[in-house]
Amino acid sequence: MGAEELEQKETALELELYESYGELVHAYQYIIHTERRMYLANAHVLKVCTNDAGDVYFDLTIEDAWVWDLYGQARFVTQARILTFKDVNIEELAKPE
Image (cartoon, rainbow, N blue to C red; front, side, top):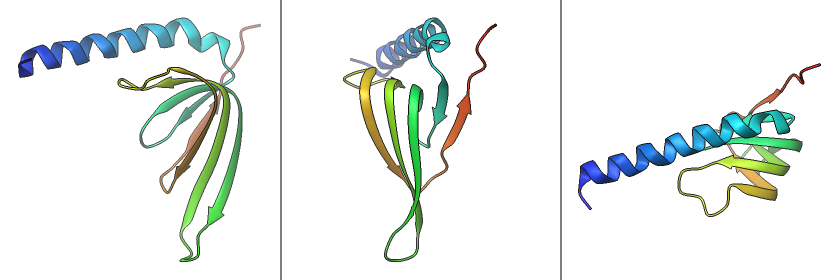
């Protein structure tokens, strides 16, 4: 597979993810962004932790989630745990009335 074919395949995967996101976003309560991925989730627990060296990190558990990941095995997960030293942004989605 050449570089052009690989790029076309990746573009098609991104388009598929974008379309799935648009169809599913209304079914979730939160959008969660980390350095590596974006998640749609209906529940989360975020803990701010400190390791022995004094570095701050985030321990995030999400439930009933959809994962924006081009190469992931599963897009829908019942629970996931994310550990990161980078920023975590959690946005609560407004529900239409």
